[in-house]
Length: 189
Image (cartoon, rainbow, N blue to C red; front, side, top):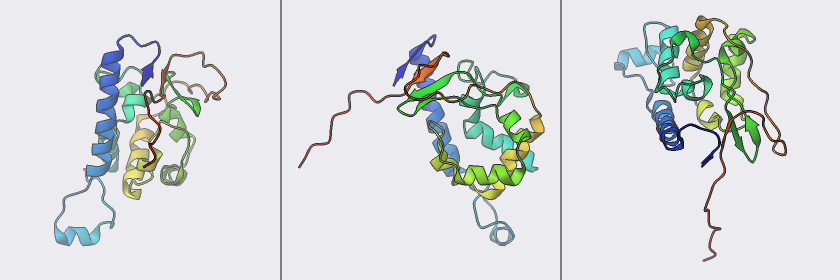
């Protein structure tokens, strides 16, 4: 991975790797531990249990690594961003063969969407990388609703972030360059 314009590329790369690991762990390990009688009354899908759906959504945001991309400065400060500033998007782009994408301001996005539309999007979207849609599509409906309710509870804040940039156009913002290096072609056997 080549990184353009960061302060400390080694630290940012390490944090990105840890973020990706955290996302994988969160999305594969978030199953509720309940008694057999309770399981019969809950949805068949695994989901987060918390005192409220908003608290479950907050937990998903933290363990899912949502802030790593959708909150400016979160990785660089090792998470030392006040919760009131979470999920306001970032103008730090992610560039690859698809072009350059930007993490949107989720707090504004949920204000523009009904809960059912948001849940449907989480289950069906296959938009531009590096968002791990293939993993997010697996989220239980209950967790998707909890995520929506948490983001909605934060209220609107900030501005919309830049639109995606086509592959042939150079972005005007800082960005990470995500292009595989030193890949050898497959060998015929």
